[in-house]
Length: 133
Length: 133
DNA sequence: CTTGACCTTCCCATGAGCGGAAGGCCTAAA
DNA sequence: TTTAGGCCTTCCGCTCATGGGAAGGTCAAG
Image (tube, rainbow over all chains, first blue to last red; front, top):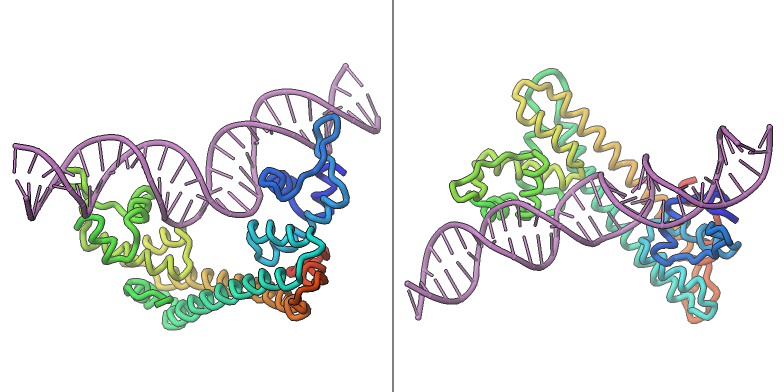
């Protein structure tokens, strides 16, 4: 398979696939003409990567997950630990965003949103307090 | 005021303050020795920026907000529109994260997390489907 | 033989800064 | 007076995960 094929089948842009090779996540063969020649196993890895990235795992997380994916004797607990850390990360991000949402939503509600210059949003932004403490 | 003072009072690192000058968000005076000399109005703007950034506004959003902040005749509706766009952005990010959370949480629940190699998380990641469609 | 779709590498850009080097300035203490 | 140290300046490179585009090689079809 050439890069366009794996791009279409994995859903990852060709640029991204080349980048993943650069940083050592995959290691496709090369044809005589210098083109990358992807095996089914490369495609599997790329699909795996696309999915893990879409779930918010960082590239370094993905590197670890791939290592576990390839290690047929690893304990499922190892994988679970990574996934749980990722879940905690997601939960933390959600609460941060919810705190922003609450603050900003209060400001928007307080603003009449008409043609007059008086604006509680700017007044609220003027105050030195932050949403996170 | 020198940069350290405004840094302490605004809560922004000195590096960030210099960066904000670079990109034209603030425009402090200079002393004879070349040091930046901040007025109270600069400090106000920096505090405003710190607060807006902590609420997730991008630098370009902040540029627009600052322009509105400085324009004493602007309509509050202009500010409200920006803030509402930001709220929508936050809401979108929250739902994306919640979708990730749901998918990953299912996978984690399905995984025994013991010493055996069988792992539903990796199997779930292997599948080509993504969390967002 | 040419066209057009591929492929390659290389370099530059993003956002929003951080880290550090090299060097100037200022104040206080020895 | 010198020295120490703390502050300030600019400049350069780094981050992360790509994206854009140039310059050039390859391949299949018409």
